[in-house]
Image (tube, rainbow, N blue to C red; front, side, top):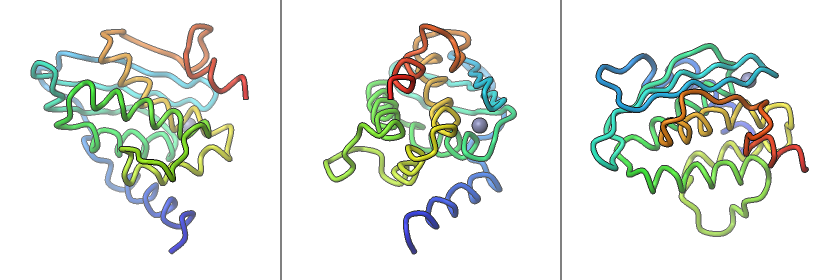
Amino acid sequence: MNLKSIYQEVILDHNRKPRNYGTLDNANHHAVGHNPLCGDRIDLALHMEGELIDRIAFHGESCAICKASASMMTANVKGKSRTEAETLIKEFREMVIGNLDLSRPHHLGRLAVFAGVRDLPTRVKCAILPWHTLQAALNSVASISTETADDPIQAATSNG
Ligand code: ZN
């Protein structure tokens, strides 16, 4: 199976059965992310026990790539520390904008199937939105948009 078909398989699987989909009781971190270019909206809730993400859930209206990215993200950061989650956010962002050398050690595991998004410029923001929303939730920022001037992803993607 080549990387492209693995990618399609993963996207389909996470759209059929999104992990951690829904709302969370007693969430203590929350953020909403918007990508107006595609119409994606991700509502993300976390329950943190100290520095540990012990529960996480998302819902919203989004395209297949955004939903699959959100589903895989929640599965990968659940049970991880804030520091570990922030490493994944950084590596995922670098990967989808084409700045991560996947032949070097990284922590992304199966998330590496999203590497192909770098060749689909209109989809980069869809894939990255859940991760940016997670960073906002960790920083206690209530909402973010991929189209605001101070958006770090906007800055990173508009230069290349
Ligand atoms: Zn989208």
